[in-house]
Length: 129
Image 1 (cartoon, one colour):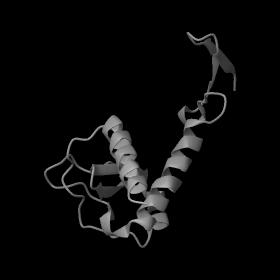
Image 2 (cartoon, rainbow, N blue to C red):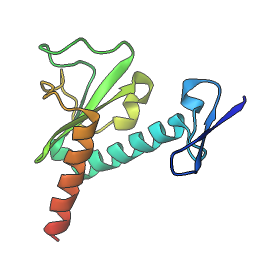
Image 3 (tube, rainbow, N blue to C red):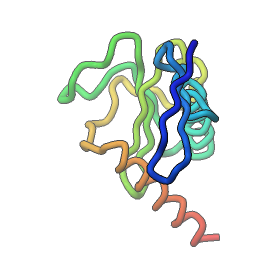
């Protein structure tokens, strides 16, 4: 697998690996690494907050059909809904999280919204301690 070095505007370099998409790297982590980290972190958050957490093998009936061989997990935070899709192979890792017949209706959130909602929620948690 070859390396591509791309200069950034700040003079630093970013390294990308040629190969399978999940093997693409910034020189520190691959996409696969970050995917694994995200899954572990959302699972921990869900286990710590079971009353607002859920999983489902189906999207809401009013939303697009579920992706083949995937499921969805989500949290209904005070700051809004957050969701992630995972390969069905990881379903058992989320055992114990409430299983719904279908996900709640998607509120249209974007990846940027998820970051804002989690960050705002974390600030609120910190403010109450």
